[in-house]
Image 1 (cartoon, rainbow, N blue to C red):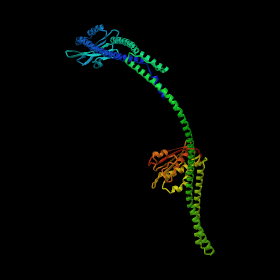
Image 2 (cartoon, one colour):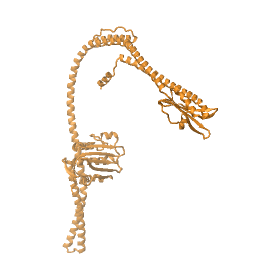
Image 3 (cartoon, rainbow, N blue to C red):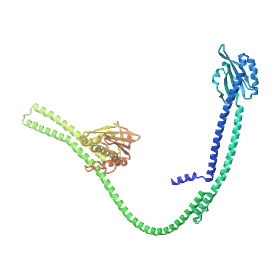
Image 4 (cartoon, rainbow, N blue to C red):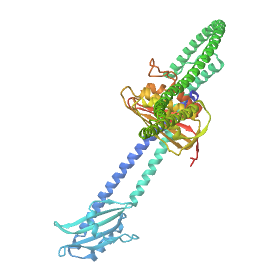
Length: 548
């Protein structure tokens, strides 16, 4: 980056010689151009004003001369009079219009057209628009009233050519341009002489600087200069050489001392390096031990999760088995009573009918509860196998989610919270159900334990969809959420909000490792305080056809 800046600075360097010449020429060009443009502009304005005054005067004279012919209504005489205008070079066309008092109409009366100049259409409809001089590209047009004793006799329209004036203007411009070029040449010659008086002494100083820098001969000195500024530069340069020579002498002495210090420093560095190597080896050993303990804690967390499931399932299975035992015991007691009555030949039809009815009811109770226990055990078996197995297999996602919720039923049933599932009932994928099972269990238990304080009823939403070869699992609760500081560290090991209350801080760390390492996926968290938490998980999977 520093090299690039240096190159940029070098590319913008220019010489004093060129700067002086360019500056003088620039000032001269600007000053001359301003004078040239302003003089030309005012000259052009003055010419236009003069031409307009002349046009008004010519028109008034010609109109006044036409008064008698207008009064006596003699257009032939007027045409003959106007033909004498050939002596005036700048008049191209003249129209005389007569005002008829009887009809109060304006009518064409007489005209003049310069030789080789074609006639132009009448201007009756434009008389009111040309009362002031009107300039166009090559002509000047004007209309003037013709009056006699304050009575309106008619109008005169005059059209003047501007060729002669433009020729004069161009001649003036050529002369000004010639003066401009000569002035610039003079300024250039003066700039050359000026820059030479400044740059020659500077060039001598530059040669001296280069010699001292290249040959490292600091005994040379710059001569006095005729210009005050350059003489100050020479004096400063000589002072710099004196100080630099003194500095070089001190540096030589310092180098001798530094060599001695370096020798001592190398010995100390070698000693410190050996000590640092020993400390690094000890640190590496400590880190290996720490990783070993961390992995062991993560495995313990997995086993603790499995143990919680086992305890919950055992409690859940005890209920249907207990009902089955109660029903079978009651049925056994009724059977002894019927047998006793049969042996004593006291068995009645009513007593037998009651026994058969109660027996059927008890058998139904036993069957339903044993069947329920079998389903719980089967679900637990599947979940337990999945949790300890990291091999891929095809499974129906919705059934898998229901098995996970069934395994957590003892924990969920003890809370007032609601869990909602959203998943295509025909979605079948090939993936590792073991890590996925552990992820869901940890997320659900994390929300139950941390998201909802005592007395708060919450909702957990789990939605699953597949897109572009990825299983997109969204886990959301409406609990207390987490702050920004906790959100940044939530996947770190040993981070918990239940420190001292049984929280290990490894649950979310385990989830992160399972998603990113076991399933090669990604997990992101979105949360605000008191607005719940949202986990977005994406896992690459193979989608299978749903069995019919």
